Length: 69
Image (cartoon, rainbow, N blue to C red):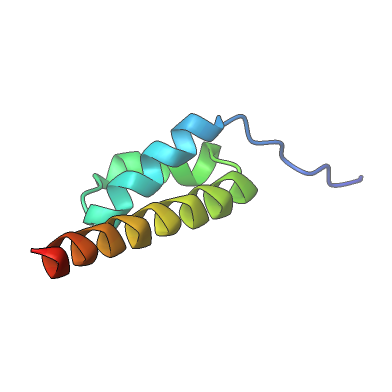
C-alpha cells in the first residue's frame, strides 16, 4: 500500500491570518490545531516572510519619524 501525500486545502489568506495572530501570540489551542491540520506549510513560510518584511518596514518608518522630529 502506497502512502499518498496529504494535500492541505488552506488558502494563502488563512495562512496570512494565522501568521498575523501569531505575531501577537494570541491563538486559541483549537484554532492552532485546525491550522496545523489545514494550512499549507509553504504558504505559512511565505506569509511569515511577508509579515517580517512589513514589521521591519513599520519599525524603520517609526524610527525615521522619531528622528526627524
